[in-house]
Length: 311
Image (cartoon, rainbow, N blue to C red):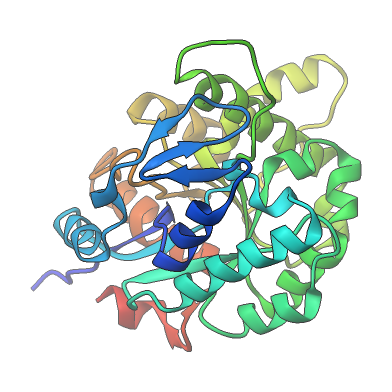
């Protein structure tokens, strides 16, 4: 009989009640009024209440074959970069709500940009949090990666991955609602990918695992241009992963041609998109949806092996 194994989705968003309450109490951006989200860099966004219903989301995942959903704070909100007291209170609300989610969900921790509490991060990563999310806006230059060195070291020492997710976009002139996700987010990820390599990140953090959202903005596809302009592409790093969020067969195929299949991981960005159900045959589908995400997470979740959760 063929083994039935569920997928691991490394990139989802779900706002627990403590975070919703905090966003509704805020009087400056980011804040919620009813279910309308207001931020600095994007048009008001009508959040769908059902998207953050735990029971409904679990049912959607089960129907899609997902057994474990890794949920992160929505970094484009910019809560991490608020003044220290505000950032601390906002992230406390996220961590409190995320830690109380059912075991189907595995949360990513977050840290304030100003004076990150390394002891608190250690406590979170020793608990139910699978790793730490950082906003790509923090690491668009080599100096940005260097400034986060202490945070990265905590994750490395605890064997937990770092998730690089798009952050807030700059206040822009009026444009369509898709502008920030298609232009701003992609640009941030592109810069963060190349800044990691320019900073010699692997030499500084030999055991750190990274997961870049949205195929790192397809930055790996520019290795030929790097070579043409005097850079050294180097070899594929088996511990730097890119997720599939917002891309389909064409984008994922292009990434595989550059990186190989072993560093491509399932990330849906649910509720904004659905997870890819299958790609390039059974073996490739299993690699992207199951085996590679397991390696990215290090094989552990909430004190048990991912294999137990995924069966």
